Amino acid sequence: MNSELYAPAVPRSYGGFDTIGLASVGTSEAALLAKLSIKPFEYGLVVKYIYEGGVFSPEVMKIKDSDLMAMWSSAVGNVAALSIATGYLTEAAIAPIIADGFKNVMALALEADYIEFEQVKKAKDFLDNPDAFVAAVVEVAPAAGGGGGGGGGGGAAAAPAPEPEPEEEEEEMGFDLFD
Image (cartoon, rainbow, N blue to C red; front, side, top):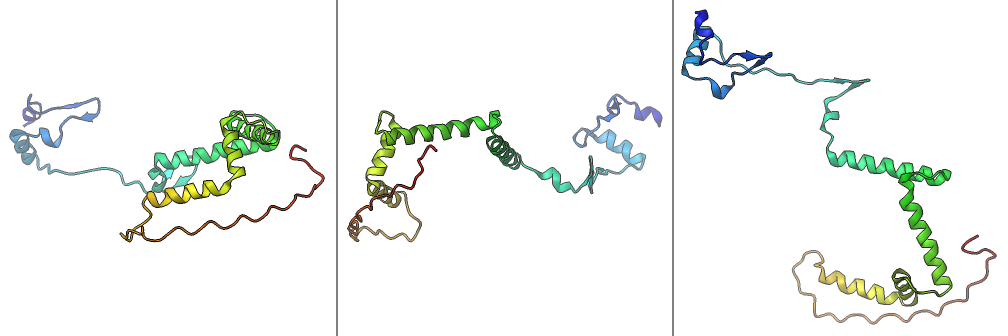
């Protein structure tokens, strides 16, 4: 009977790993397993708790890459906010600091009427005529689809734009933008 176990057709265990798979059992192997009263079985582990520096439920293992990236982005934002608040420059705070500096340069260029940058030109156009930008957004929104209903909606005429109210003179408050 032992000679049947070591027949060349029956794969053996190498390095502690069983090399017999469900697909590799032939008729002779099945007959041998039947003679030994070995029936097919399945084994494995059911994880109830995870212990690594504390006890956790198996739900911890179901974290997706998108969840990790969201947590990472939040942490980098917190580092940048802390860095900016303390005045200690870190790599995470460089982009917000540069953006804030550009906003200051743009405000200074608008105040001095130095319109050489494309972004300053767009800001100046917006400040001069904000209704044109609102009208452009309103025109794009219906063309994008809208939402459902299936109706045409092309019969209604656009309402006339309201008259802009006269701007009041700003009073000097005693402080400046760059104080």
